[in-house]
Length: 609
Image 1 (cartoon, rainbow, N blue to C red):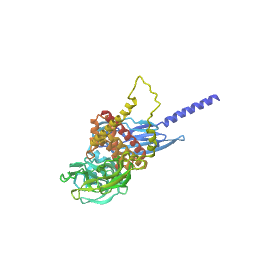
Image 2: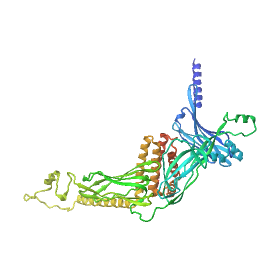
Image 3: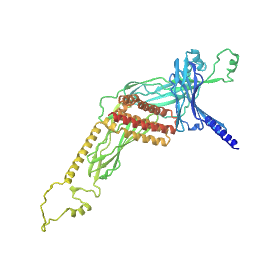
Image 4: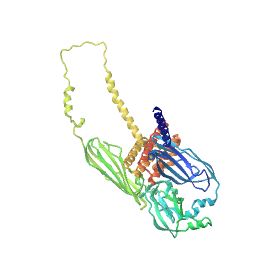
């Protein structure tokens, strides 16, 4: 009996070991062939096997240096049940084509699962010399020229010449005579020298019938963007690239009777080929604004605007807050507007303003920019806030326009219970202490005796004398530092860069909590770019990602940290225009990474000072 039980125990242990091996997690990379021609297409499979494949996250693709990605990642899953236990596999596949001849290595890929990171092994691929016929066969019997004539992207601008800051509308249209599947973005256009705002973003592509050079096509507008030039001269907009799966009828490749029979239209033999569509490069000539009759208050605003200043009250008591709001509304680049600085009379204190942007991204970018100040009167009397000027250049009338707010008169009265020594007003507490302050002179019963040492000045006297002086010098120092900061805008922005970034990050977090991913990535991008502008002393009109990365490099910031900044920036820009595949989980991860990067960059810059 004992031997039977022992045999059963060994059997159970043996089966358990087998089960563990069967359901052990692994992440492997395979390829359908390791030797390919230079025009061949081949597939790479990255497969994770485990019990719960739905818990796999943070897929990081390998480095495909030496190859062009025609399609991918294409995701598929499969499930199986062995002895009542469920296991599955998750596969990410790519279709690749070599870009040159030689031996290449497809790098490691990795995923996270159950708190661990799993990585694939590198794959070695040998690319041999091929023939143009192989290229033709790899595109379903069609040449690249034939595909380019039937499927292409056309970039169009509503004007080829504009003034500095004037809106230029650019649209990207996909023309096709063939049946296509869902295109995938491979490269977004670069808008160097422009501030870009996407117009009417859409998640679906809708085709209409249109004509181009006298030929009939199916046409879809895939992207529309408003560009605002930030510098003059001849500016270029780089091409927009899409990977388009084209469904073509397979051509006859020989004299085989069976091939001819099955190539009949009744059977509809077709295949899907991957075609890389690339738009044309746009050139925009940007002219400078007129240099004559430029108002003193002009600060770069271009468009058509209305300016309004509002005060919530014109009577207040001392230390009572007053809200003053400046509003610019109209059409133009709302986000780049700089509103005038508020000047207050003596006796007022103002706090850091709150700034709001309400942007309507239609065919013309319009909306409002609101700056709200909180001001507090500290002394009573009749006060007057001077008129505020806002100037802008109107492209339609080709002239500068200045709008002025009215002057605001405010009557400030002293609040109750507030002490004014010069007015002779005293509170009850002051009267109560009056009897304790006065002492009568004693005229008799003296009992005086001489002391050996008399200290005329006590230590507390020196302390009471030194403390006000120390406080005075500290206040003067703080005031000088503030004046220095306000006199040096670059230094002021440097000091407040992290604070401004935190405000933007809070806005992004609210959008993430509401699952507004497009708005989230837009705010996250603005937080990162705004921080780099302020911290590196780059004007918003001159800002480019390349310039900021170059300045970080010259500041001796570690290369790995600079690369992380670049990855986040490119990820945000990519997702803003292609958010379909994004989830709240991945957005949360990039938010955490952005916070870490800003903190690390800020610490590195402070150490270098």
